[in-house]
Length: 566
Image (cartoon, rainbow, N blue to C red; front, side, top):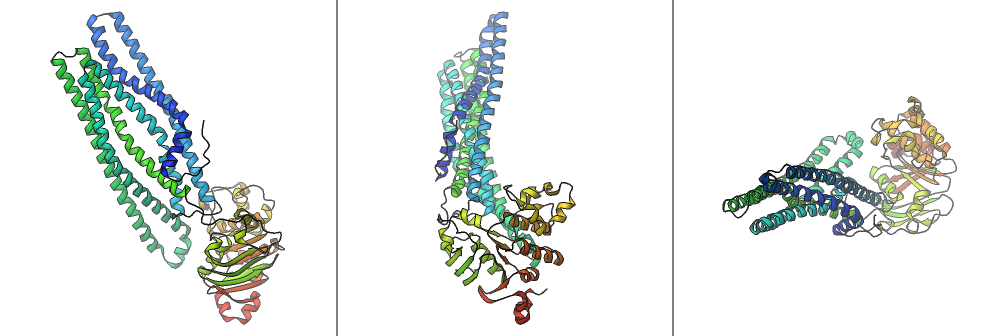
């Protein structure tokens, strides 16, 4: 039975304790079965020694048959206990990894971002690889205990034959673990660094994929490739370092285990030669010396896996324990749809001030792309209100006083690079499945040709990131999603940069018609969208420098004409 996880873990140790606590039942059952497995494995050479000692010495068929039956019971016990023990542990491991993946993903998807110096690609790595490696602690602890059981059973059996043999196993095991525990700390440090570098490489790939089209546009492909190669090379060198450390660790563990097994075998042979132990006890000792190599190997590897799990847990704690970048308000916007930007200073924005009345269709022509991006980020609440001067008001209420969830319901900012998910056209347009305007959104965004092109229609399968769609189709699909949301205030950022001029004209006309009576802001340089708007605001160097209809600005503002005319 799992323990509910109601508290936010602050450290990697907290995460590991939580994982162990809520899987205590599965771990107890798995430990019992794996302990039984190791005990059965240990019993096999002991049984062989007893057979040599009694059944073969007495030449009794009955004793031999009994011995064969005992071996069959041991083999059956070993087989079944391993099978069901690992099934329990692996199920608990997989379930626990899923829980942490969901928690990390939930943190990344929260409306209010966390104050953590990680990119989205790094968070993805933490939610996958680190979650899996952290959950491995569920298997590591039972296997550690069961290996200890095997070593103790072997030590007791050898001690009953001769105390010196038992003490040799115990002292040798302690010495091996002491040496390897020191080496495992180096593995933990190297692994943490490797995970960080791999995550940075993953983040760089994500950034490059997102900006691939702009990179093609200004010829930055080669420089971007060199940047990624540098990060990837660092990750490769660190991976080689980790592999080298792991190799030294594994080689040292194998050598120490082999030395201990050889020492037990040689001592048993000397004791048998001296008449201190019988031939049956010698067979048992030699068999146990060979057998304990495997549990000792497993036992000696556990510190390494514990350090890896701890390193991954500490990386997860970076995300889970990070505080939100801001504390949002609790109010909701009043009915209506007016939008006011009052003296906002952020990035390239210099005391930007404008107002959009409820139901108005306003286009914003930003001469500098960075200005458009900064404005979209502020309106989308990707920038916390306390990170910029001035205020943004929705229906007369400051953004800082509103809950982020309420803002999301009232105001939608659709970015130019909106994500396309694996699924269908319909699930991408209407993810919650509650929109009543899907067909209207499809028509307004001119996605009808894509729907008509495939026999499945809106149920046509879309690959991750829209890999089976063209750039224009992906952009129109994103626009359809924004229109289907039917929010009171809609902000579109460059929604038609990848479509042809004719389609752009139709989209501009359709959007204006569909959004009539609803507040709409389009940040664009598209003449078609600018012409469809009720008025145009010109942003130059972070401030509004002109305001009029598109046609009046074309007629009277030469700089505007040069910036938007195609």
